Image (cartoon, rainbow, N blue to C red):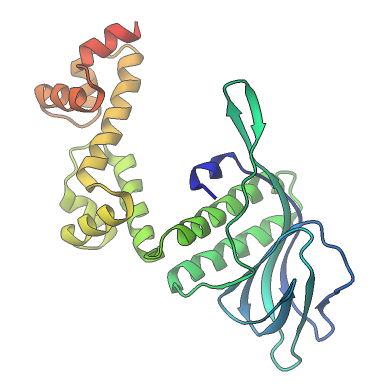
Length: 274
């Protein structure tokens, strides 16, 4: 799946559970399943069949069944499987030139895959746990809250699938840096301050930021400031007021940076938007 389609996916859930299997639990081979099923095993073991493939699954395994997949499975009395499981359907509506179009966005998961990244596995455990608690609560907004949690899980899994060098610990550190920048861009923060907030050295932050995002933290911070500057200029703020509010202490540097990114000066941007 093109990860850019992720924003368009709309899931609908039919079953969500923290499943602690009994000795009698099993997938019935004569049942036709018409939902997608995603399972994260966090304890115990089971033998599962997907179509013509047989798998022994254990802690850290992600299991994915598509609708109509033949499913057979059982756990073991001395090592009962514990797992999170969700049955769901989804659509992927995308706005095209002539209106809405449903795009065929197949999920890229294999029937069984081992999640060896301990940070990713820990985060998925937390998200699945939150998801099941939200579903169990019965609140009127459980579907909306559940979708938000599920989409975060799906985002992480698609990032993991897209990159052989995916490392959730690095992702988490980069996200912490970005959150700090979006909260503090109005101040004249430095790379050292960003790195101190994350708890790593400036050089290490620069390295993982380049690896994960493709640019430096300071360039990314500049982008945040200039996007906010465009909002303020559209809302009637002067160039000088805008520069001050987005963390620039030099209006000439602000104008130069704005032109480099937008192809026009802030003053020209105001005229074009009026």
